[in-house]
Image 1 (cartoon, helix red, strand yellow):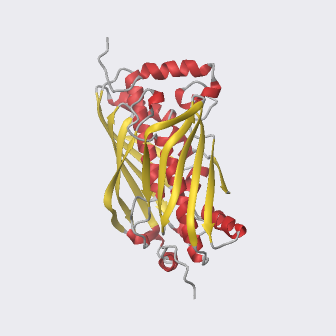
Image 2: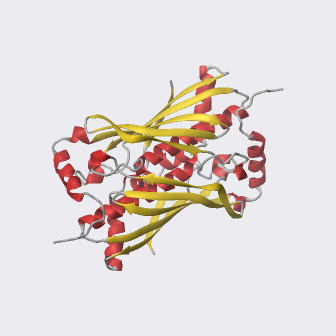
Image 3: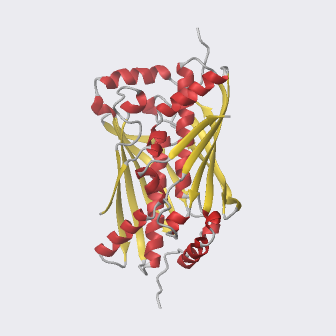
Length: 182
Length: 182
């Protein structure tokens, strides 16, 4: 009998997988963010509601996030830059995956830390050179993991986490984004 | 003489564009996030340092972001989900762009609000169906903008913001992401 406990309810996830096999409509989620311009390039974005399992859902509380540009861009630095939020999401998604896969494989984690670095040539967004893209050139994630497992088992955890990561997919593959003015 | 003031220092951005034309190495930025697993699928990610203009830089303060899964995923909902952070970044980036372009075009903004919705079939991440992708199916952004401008001018602001948006590019085009275990 395993005493491994990473705090992930893997049985619930396996049950959900089984249940959603016969109910694909329940698997259709809509995540939502509502944003409001403050001043300059400073905005506040709130996340609380979402839709899924066929019904309106909500996080226990609303979470509001400031975004701004740093002082070296002649702004007020009231929050992190918009593009840094992508790195937050990537780190969090891969980390959640590592914990979930470890639980499923009976591997006890002691600590999981990661550093995510996005290389960005800002000549794109400034319009200096139209051959330079606006987004990241590339992103590198480095994990430091302490667990009851071999180096190979830990690398396999991280590989499986990537394979099932929503954010890793969203960044490495294109998504259709429609922007409208109401 | 214009009295338009959206709080964006457009002259500084135009000066930066000019300066970086002759100094592409100064335009190479590295954005960074450092993440730590808490328990279950809950993590805390901190953003403060970055590199750019040839030197180490930092936001005025460190910003820490909780990510978790909601209770309908049998988790504790200690924060928004990782994939929702992508919507926060997208909303903030497009909004900053609208403010900057409006300033440059002499258009006074009164309010800019947006709703971002990401459609997500969670059968991908749960491993129910390998034909379903892990990330968003698609994303829709709806702006409500009150400004001293015609509907056409406002739509042109939003279009130009998209064209120069770092996050819009990062989501609509693929980026190479490397994941390593140290």
